Amino acid sequence: MKIICVGRNYINHAKELNNPVPAEPVLFMKPSTALLINRRPFYFPDFSKNIHHELELVIRISQNGKAIQPAFAHKYYDSVGLGIDFTARDLQEKCKEKGLPWEIAKAFDYSAVLGDFIPLSELKNREAIEFELRKNEAPVQTGNSKDMIFSFDQIICHASRYFKLLKGDLIYTGTPAGVGPVAAGDTLTGYLEGQPMLYVSIK
Ligand code: ZN
Image (tube, rainbow, N blue to C red):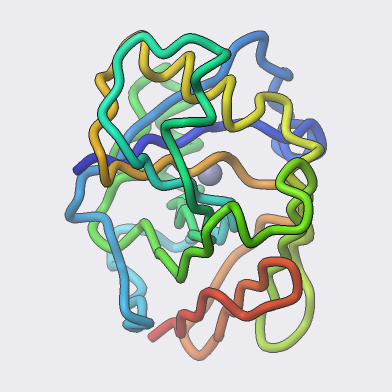
């Protein structure tokens, strides 16, 4: 499986990092070795001094597809969950300055925390999914899928032009504002529609 991530999909987050608002989805990928599941702790790596949390809605691909057309995009995912796109912001800034790829800052081992999923059919409004991250119990990020620049369907169409989507692939759909650093001893809890769906402690 592969993990496709969307950068800059909320205007307020693009602004907080002084990035332009994109005209089409900004995509990057993480390998399967980036996954951190089963509420395992995250060990702060030695190559960075500034790891940021980015809480994101994650959709799981439910059937294979290539060059998916807009009218059919909704048929290719059936559940949504929460993930954290851990980012070594110090490494990312160096890569961006030099115009180099971001992989070492974004795709490192255990950089993709994944929580629980719920079927889309169980959501009361799949066009406006609320989510929140609390760090040590205090809210730090709140988001709503209605504020995404590119919708789930638009991301599916765009990504599948370039990358064949396979059942089980994950799409991290971008973070709202409020990203910030984590430190050893912190706990992060993600809520989707008020329900705790993701938990990670930092060691
Ligand atoms: Zn992200």
